[in-house]
Image (cartoon, rainbow, N blue to C red; front, side, top):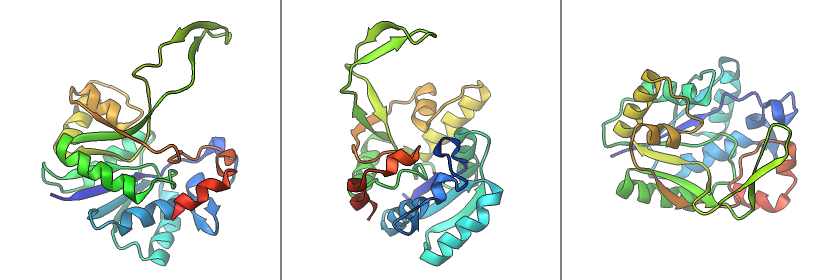
Amino acid sequence: MKFYTIIPASGSGKRFKSRTPKQFFKIEGREIISYVLRKFNSLREIDYIVISTQINYFKRIEKIVLDNEFEKVKSIIEGGNERMDSVYNALRLLKCEKDDFIIVHDAVRPFITTKKIKELIRAAKVYNSVVPALKLNDTIKKADKKNIFEKNIEREGLFRIQTPQIFRYDILMESFKKAYKEKFFGTDESSIVQFAGYPVRIIEGERTNIKVTTKEDLQFNRLFKYLY
C-alpha cells in the first residue's frame, strides 16, 4: 500500500489580481506552493508527489523543487483546462496498485497541518474515500437572479468541503472513467466519486485550512503560524 499525492497547480489566479499566479505568490519569503510541497514531502507516509500544471510554469516549479530538495516530487506534468482534467492527467501517469491511495490537495491551501493529513490517511485506510469538511454555521439563503432572497436553506447536513481528499486508487480511477464517459463535470474529486456511486466519508476539517483566492486571504497574520 502506497500513498501518492497529486497537486493540481494550473490556475492563473485571475481573482488574485496579480501578475504572479497565486501558487507562486510569496509569504514570508517562500512561494505558497512550496509550503504545501514541504508538508507532504516531510511525511513518511507519502511515497510520491506529482504536480499538474501549465507548461509555462514548469521551470518555476522545477526550481522550487530543486532549491528545497523536495525529493518526493517525482513528476511535473501538463494540466488541463479544468481541475478535473489536471487531476486525471496526473492520475493516468501513476502506476498504482488497486489498493494504493491517491491524495489530492490544492496548491493554494498552505495552512493545512501535517497532523490533519496524517489523520486523513489513517481514516482512508478504514473508509477508502475521505474528505475534510466543516459544518456550515451561518444562515444560508437562496436568491433569485436579481439577488432578492427567495428562501432559507436548511443548514443541517451542509458542509464546506476542503482538501486533501483521499481515495483508494481503483475507486478514483473508475470514478473518473465513468464521469468522462457520461460527460459529468465535477468541481472536486469527491463529487466525481459520489457520482460513480461510491460512499465518501467526511472527516472534520480545519478552519485555518483556507484556500487562498484573493490577497485579502493573506491579511490574517495569525494564520501564518500554520505554514510550518
